[in-house]
Image (cartoon, rainbow, N blue to C red; front, side):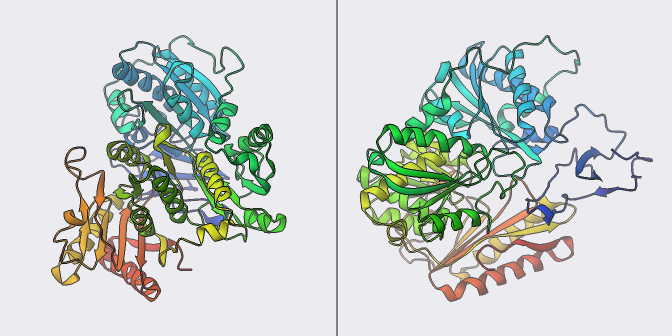
Amino acid sequence: MVPRLANGRGVGQRGRILDGPIPRDNSSGSQTLETRRHSGQPLIECRNSQRLTICNSDPEEKVHAMFDPALFERKADIRGIYPNQINEELAWLTGRYLARSLQRLTGSKSPHVLVGRDGRTSSPAIYSALLQGIAAEGGVPIAAGLATTDMIQWGVGEQLNGAVAGAMVTASHNPPEYNGIKMVYRNPETEGLDILRPLDHLAPAYANDADNGAAPAASCAPFPAAGRLDLQSRFVAAACDRSERLGNAKGKIVLDPGNGVGGLFGPLLKAELKKRGAEVEILTVAEQIDGRFPTRPSNPGLPGAVKLLQETVIEQGAAFGAAFDGDADRVFLVDEWGQFVSGSVMLAALARNAVLAAKGGAVVYSAVASWLVPQTVRAAGGIPAICRVGQDAAKVALMQTNAVFGGESSAHYNFPDTYCLDSGLFALVDFWDMLLASGKTCSQLLGELKPWPSSGEVNLRFTCSDWTAVSRDVIAAIRAEYSDPASNAYILDLDGVGVFSPRDPKLATVDDVFQVDAEHDPDGKTYRIVADYTPDWWFNIRASNNEPLLRVNFESSDPADVAGRTYALISRIREICGSRATVTVQDWGNLK
């Protein structure tokens, strides 16, 4: 229950004014709850048992909607806590604004939109409202039902039932209390998939909308007109078609969907492999789709998250294991010894394979991926291109550089031959094919790649009244300090601040190391082409898009550098903050 406000500031016994983000609740191992403030006003957190309520604390501010309109201003997707930030009302308006935007993009009054949902407990209601909103504006929703994010993206690329765009109800790897909506558009010029950013396509529509509260007549049912869309089986078949060797597979592999929607893959993959004559056993842990994620966090990249998978691979003598995130567009591997394979190592392995197959070509990688990636790409005869973190940047860079492969260290892997789709299952099949071709074990194949000693991603949580300003000032201060010629480093402003040392006498400026594509990205704000340069050490500091976190990544060719230099960076960040913020280490990466 929301507490009664007295003169705009009083709260009930269980409430308190929040000038910053809601603190992390470590009891469930979930990630931090975060709220967005309306018009700079503080919010109230009200806890009643397991219920969380967010409300605006200023009674004089006119409330236009019972959701958080700030979600329309996000850069990649909609993501928030259900039902306070994201709910059915927001989903309905999202559908309506999406259809309106697609009408402008396509010139069609009835654009077809493929819509799917994950297994979160709030997803059916949000999915239904989203479909209704699309139809209310004249769009034609194609109701795919339960699906993975890459299934929806692939279906849009294939123009399934005439789809020109797709919307997926999911909060990806976030904890159970979150939900969200991801949107893509099939670009007719590039034939690739563009991320439809809420900031560009939803926020203007909401800002210009009227105040009519009369609801239109019901426009559609949240179910398909017929029952045989078969998106799920067709997608798995398309993934398996990437390999001519799967029919020769033997032994065992283990899948871990973590109770996410990737639980669809097990039976479908078994059926496809049987058709191809494979004598392989597909084992699954945490297969039951359960939006509460009872077995492990929905983010398999968190420390210790895939322990059950690791144990099962060893016990069963499996060739490898694969763990998917909540919406199954990301995948992490463990080898036959149960050793976790980092996203950067997997990215380097898949990139090398793609470059060798194409006999060259560009590979796009994110700004926080290991330097192992550009090293491996260059050694294979490819051209490394570094981009901002996020699929909105990655997909643009892939198309503009005509890349043969791309991805992020977070275990997003992109396939330019299939609409620049980022797919966990496609990555699994490509790796499996590579493994079968090599005749080696998983550890032997990946052991050919030598990861740099690194801190991993260290997340620093800020408690302060103005997280945005403080984080901006920290990044600016670090940039200024390392811009001093005495630091002997290059400064890259592509994403947060990147520092690379030492300078090479042959490469006078940072633009000589990270070269701007003057034709396709003249500002160099999305991606850069990487010259033949290797630092002794480098680090990146960037702000999270979703939480009051600074993310620190440090790598060095010398293992002795990593801990000391990373701790020194953390100390320096605290010094810069001073009394403006309390800085605590939320995740220690590889350090502890």
